[in-house]
Length: 140
Image 1: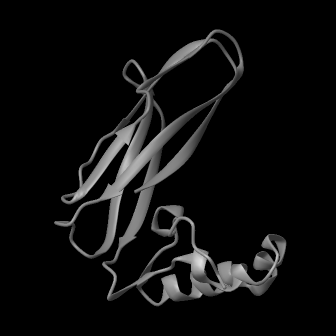
Image 2: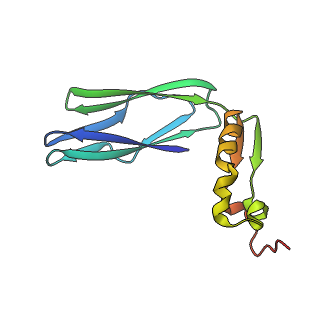
Image 3: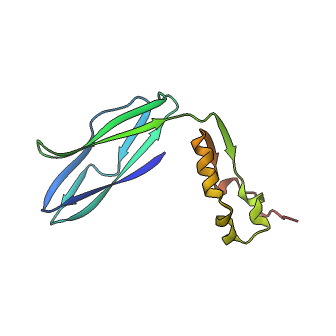
């Protein structure tokens, strides 16, 4: 699941509708709001949630978002996502890792995020969440 922010800028007061016009099998799309009301010029945001389901077809999938007011289409946004299913999975349980011996701030200097990005690009899934930590662990 990923969420994206759509930034909508209006120079006048108006009401805009946001909707996705096409559906892709195996991908669930949802917007946190389908209508944006501007009382005057300004900036507003819409969150787009994209969830890849187990029955999705691997490969490049494309869908569109339309920003409209009545019959007028102000903008069409084409979004493409590369659907890939992991070939392997790594469960990172950092509570038993190097941060048992090093201060918390040094963890960022160990390049952990760079190698996690590299592993992800090799089509390997990584779970790195606190829910996998063991409470009351004694590193000694």
